[in-house]
Amino acid sequence: MAELLALLLICAGLGFYLAGAIGLLRFPDLYTRLHALTKADNLGLGLLVAGVALLHGSMLLALKLLLVWLLVLAGSAASAHLIAQHALRRSREP
Amino acid sequence: MSGLFTWLPDLLLAAMLVGLGWATVSSTDLRRSVALFIAFGLLLSIAWARLRAPDLALAEAALGAGLSGALLLAALRDEPPAGAVPEGLPRWLRTLVDLLAASLALALAWVLWETLSEPAPARLGEAALSALERSGVSNPVTAVLLNYRAYDTLLELVVVLTAVLGVVTLGRERPGYRRAGPVLYSLVRWLVPLLILAAGYLLWIGAQAPGGAFQAGATLAAASVMLRLSGIDSAGLPNGLAGRLVLRVTLSAGVGLFLLVGLGVMGTGRGFLHYPPAWSGGLILLIETAATLAIAAALALAFRGGRPAGWEADDPDHSPRERRP
Image (cartoon, rainbow over all chains, first blue to last red; front, side, top):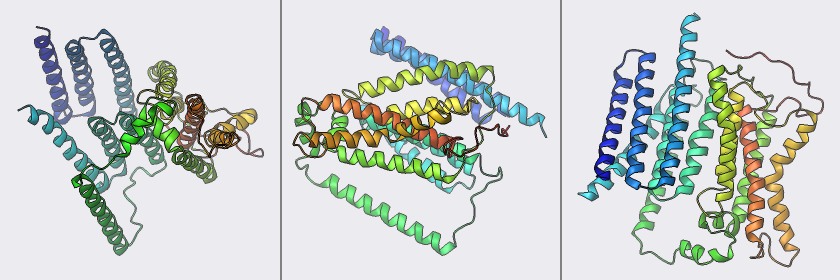
């Protein structure tokens, strides 16, 4: 039962990664691409982490993975903000 | 069926590595090359992890992809924006270099093939594991680096120190970065203490699990890079007249303490760097601590890109410089 749930979570996570990758390649400009990439990656990694933690079944590992996910969340949110801000500033200045 | 599922990702990883390597070298846009090189380093660290060499995977991710990437990006800032690859060398010379590199690669491939096809002789790994109890640490990689082949590591630290001396003689440091906005600032405020904590953990755990001075030093240097990028020009390195001495001592601490320990054990009638088994754990931790600080300071100074203000006694004092947008 737990394995099936883990499989579902991991597959859903991979789906988000796929959507993010397609968005990165297909969306028209930088802002929409950033949107696709960060949203999909954050949620995708979260689902993946939940699935792997469930599969492994150890509380300590789950906590470590949760910490990794939180760090990635903070990092990707901040870097997406910085990239978007840089692009916005550059498009305003000639 | 299960064989396919383990082989296919590895094959894909190898193919992506070769493809990324080729794209990095053949790209005419330096910016693109650097970005591809960072991606190459990250994939390479996954490859090391797949080969069950977690120590190397950590070092590759921290130094190969992370710090080298940051150094290359900082160097790119000096380039003119339309910086295509400069023409430089004449065509025949480039062809010659290509031929030499290709023959080197072929020779390496031949050596690898010969090594793999031979029956396994008495491997050094077994010898390393059998003497592990007397090495003072339980991580075989650290035992090799800091005990059995300590001489090699000492010389590696000399290389790092020489590189820093080169950086310092190149000229003044690059201009700093603009003050961070609220988002980056709050990220840095959280991340820098975490990175320092992680560096201490990597240094300590290196005795029994993957980790050690190089990984810890790179992590500490990453904290310094974060500080520098958020507009703190000193990047966490000591500044000013008193700081000058501290910085110099820190930079040479890795080599200096290693040499002192090596010569010190000679005083007890042993060979150079031949630690007494009862002390080796403590001595290794001492050397690794000094090496961590020295490597971190060296990498941080390299990211600053030259002699910091106030490095020489007669240097003009810290003067406000123009900041790049």
